[in-house]
Image (cartoon, rainbow, N blue to C red; front, side):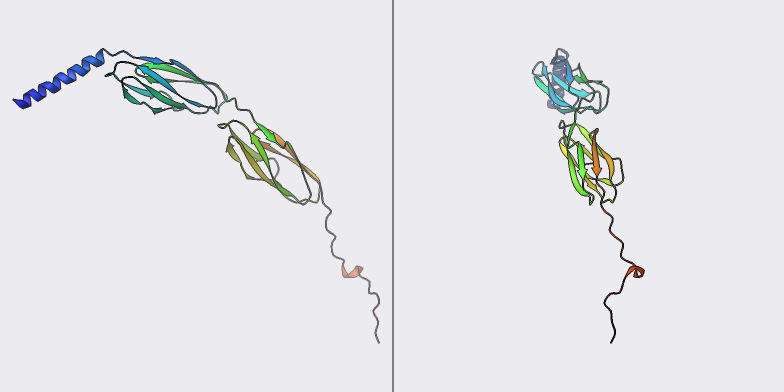
Amino acid sequence: MLQRAAVLIAVLFVLDVTSVEAQCSYSVAPTSVSAQSTGQSGSIAVTTGGLCTWTATSGVSWITITGGASMTGLGSASYTVAANTTGTSRTGILNVAGQTITVTQGANSCTYSVSPTSISVVSTGMNGSVAVITGGLCAWTATSSVPWIVITGGASMTGLGSASYSVGATTVARAGTLTVAGQTVTVTQSGGQPSSPPASPANLRIIGVGFD
């Protein structure tokens, strides 16, 4: 008898919860998001009854739900939009409490400045670096156009940083370039005097040699 009563109570509870959820209504804010190309984090507020359950999901890989994936009652769903490193804008959706939130993100708008933009190198060679100023989520690379300038650090970076390089010695003047964060850095190197070859025996004069 007690077992039947317990089953009946459980059934009534399920029916009651189902009835409550059937009557739940949800509103979310905002219903659209315009994200920066460098990415951003935010949240979607949900207004509903205290016993109403809801979930939050992302429709694209570049938007991640970071909190509030499964909630009951008033609350919010947190999300992160990844940086858009492409040259085109994109659109994705979030589904929060059954409501659709449209997320639009502009194309990569990162700007870069480097210092110095020209380098003068002595004939014996040198090591140095080029500083890069840009946004914290902006990616960049550093490459050399000639084999005698070698990138030794910072070949692939994100945000503020620097690219290190090494220039070898030379006996002739020469010029090359580095491409750092899309900017051209000109490298000029002066030529050094080649060392004199040792005198051959045929060119030696024996002076002041005598015999008793």
